[in-house]
Image (tube, rainbow, N blue to C red; front, side):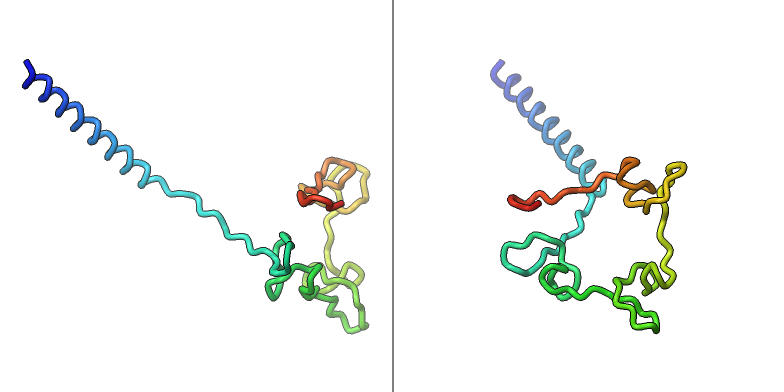
Length: 123
């Protein structure tokens, strides 16, 4: 009787290890999502995304300026030029609205939500 219990226990352990190995193999077959590494600003205490040279705009990253020949100093939007010199800007898709689209093709008034900073003391 003792021998039968030992054999049953051995069979149970074998089956358990076999199913565990099958689960591990199945989990290994499913590709994991690789999270993109977010680069933070190198300034002390700053958690903003770095833009250029390892720092955010607030701490010295250069902002691209309009490249038109008229000496414009506005920030470049698309194609290296500002809105005045031909950069196309999307308009809110809500009927009768002439505001600029912010997110999802709509303006703030028609549902675009702006993500607020999560740092303490930030306004």
